[in-house]
Length: 110
Length: 114
Image 1: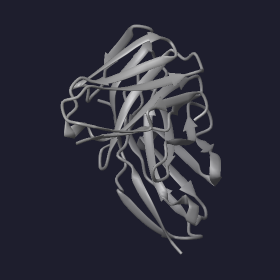
Image 2: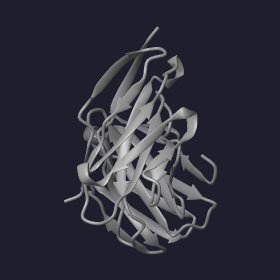
Image 3: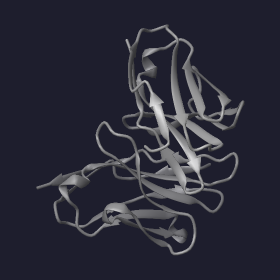
C-alpha cells in the first residue's frame, strides 16, 4: 500500500532465535499498529504506538516487544521465536481517513 | 468491551446473485466502522467506512453498507457479485480517539459459484 512498507515479506527462522520485523511509513502519521493474522482468529492487535517512544500493549502482546525511535519506523521484535508465533504480521497506520495496512510479513518458525 | 461479530464464517453465492455479509458490533461510544477485503496472499484493502452522516455508505467495487445503530449492525451488500469478489471480508470497529484502535471480526470467506 502506498506510504507503508513492511520488511521482510517472508522469513523462516528457527525456534529460539530473535526476529525483528520492520514497518516503515512515509505519511508522518502518529499512530502505528502491529497485528497478527491467523486462520479463525482474524486480525489481533499485538502492540501499537501513538508517537515516538510511546507504545502500548494489545491483546496478544506476550512474547513480543516493539520500538519506535523515529516517526517513520515501528519495529516488532520476537525475543525468542516459538512455533506459535508462525503467522502473518500486518502493520497499519492511522490517518484522518482511517487505517491503511501494509502488505504483510509471513513468518514461519521451525 | 469492544467486539465485532461476523456470524458467517463461509458464504457461497452464485455469480450474479446478490450478497449480504453480516456484521454486529459492541462499542461504548460512537463507532467508526469499516469493511476490508483480503484476497489470498494479499494485504487488506479498504472497501468502505462509516464515520458519520448518511447511514448508507458507498464503497469501491460496487459495495455498499448500511449502519443501523438500533441493531448495532453494519452489513455489507452488493447487488450482483462477480467471480473476482471471492475473498475474505473483515468488518472492523474503532474510533479516532488517542488510545483507541481498530478491532476486527474473524472474517467471512466468500465463495462464488460459476
